[in-house]
Length: 69
Image (cartoon, rainbow, N blue to C red; front, side, top):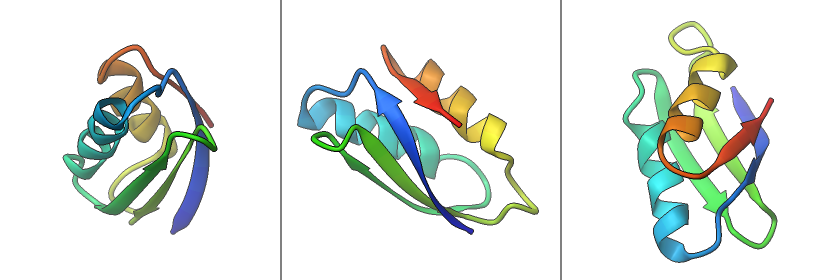
């Protein structure tokens, strides 16, 4: 599944990397590409292995970010 989520709180390339790395660390996530200007992240994941709520939790715990489902 490929889906784009809104992420508030990303302000710099370091933030972008934090969000991407938090998501890529989850089993079932094939790729994650954050866009600072669009305040979003596009995630390619296997929905049989990881749920959107788990993606949100990983981003929310990665720093001062909040992902909207």
